[in-house]
Image (cartoon, rainbow, N blue to C red; front, side, top):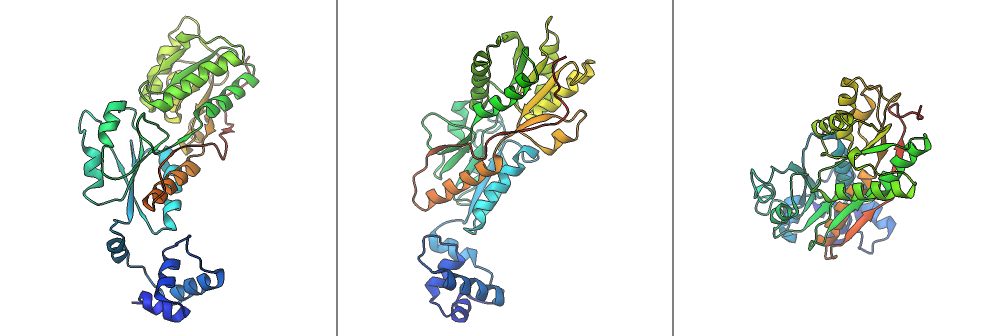
Length: 336
C-alpha cells in the first residue's frame, strides 16, 4: 500500500507539501502545477489517506454529525447532500442520526455524538423541542450549528428565508385570483413556523387581503398534522378558496383530507406547500410547492462548522441564494 512518503517522492515535493495538498488545505500557498503533480501521483499510486493518523495529529475525530428529526424524511435529502459536499474536500466523515423526543430522552444527543466520536454537530430542530429542551440538548462541549432554526443565547445557525418562501407561494395564489386564503401553520413552538406565520399575516395585509384567524390552523410538519388541520379548516361555515401549507409533508396529509371530504383540488380548493420533495410530484393531483435552498444551506452549515473547527467564530447566517422558487404542478388553478 502506498504511503504519503511515496506520493511525495513521485511528485518530487516535500512530505509537508504532499500532506497539505492531499488534505485539501486551501490556505496553503502551493501553485496549481505542484498541486496537480501531487494529485496525479496519489492517483497513480492509488494512495489512500490514513485518517486515523491525521485525527490523532489534530486531536480530532475527523467526523461531524448531521442530526435531523427523522432520518427517513425525504425533505432532508438535499440538506444531507449539501453537508456531504462541503465535507468531502476536507476528508471529513458525516454521520446521520435522529433525536428522540425530549420527554423520552433529554440526553439523547450526547449519546448520539458519543465521547469524542464527532468534532461538531449540525442539528435540525424537531418540532417536539421547546427552546428550553433544545438548550438542554445542545449543552455540549463541542460546537453545534442549528439548521433553519435560531435560539436566543446561542450563536451558530444557518437559516433560510422563510418570509420569502411564503411570499412566493402567496404571489402565485394571488396571481390566480384567490383572495380568500387560509394557512396551515407549523408547530407553534418551532421558530421557523413562527417566522412563516408572521410572514403570512404581514404579506396578506400587504396584498390588501383579510387575515381570517379562523382560516389559520396551527399544525405541525408531518402528514397526520396536515390532515387534521385541513379537516378542521373544512369544518368552518365559510371556507377559503386556497390554502398555503407550511410544510410539504403536512401538505400531503392536507390534500388527502380534502379529497376524502369530497373537495375537488384544484377546482374548489387550490393548495401550495413550502418545501419540495419528490413525493409532491407523485400524489394526485401533484402539489405545487415552493422549493427552498436546502442544498446550499446544508453546504453553508457544514462549511461554517468546519471553518469554526479551524478557528473561525460561529455566526448566524440566512441563506437566500439560490432564491426560493415556485415548482408549478397541478394542485393550483385560477379562482373560479
